[in-house]
Image 1 (cartoon, helix red, strand yellow):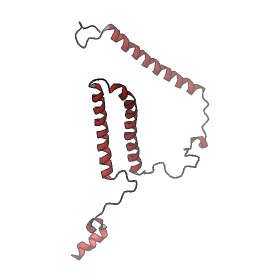
Image 2: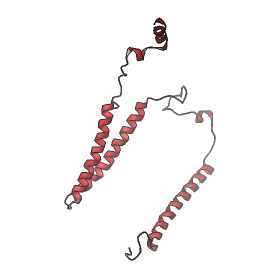
Image 3: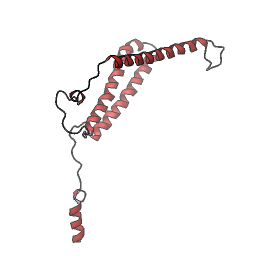
Image 4: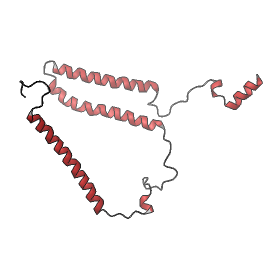
Length: 161
């Protein structure tokens, strides 16, 4: 790196490095396009009604494909992803931490960064737990009799008054 150049100036070696990366990306896209094109030309195509039906674990599909799913499936998937990402970050940190701990000030910095990361995730877990989203079967909201009355019952009460 040349210290005489003003900040933000690209050196020829830096431009060459970016050009190499750009060429690799372009070659990757071209190769993928050629592979997909050749596969489309060479593969047999004889669709039949049996081949075009939806495959559901060996069962014949029944009903509409536009079925409403419970939002808890989505929530459980999100919680899994959040805590899976936590583990993905925690294992490499634990492996490297033993080597970084003896380094002055770096070991403490790395330790407290992970503590902050785990604290943020713990606050998220506590929030989800308090909201009751970890319970698969949630209890129904308690309503007052006036809130749970049907419109017909309310009309009768209004007409009686």
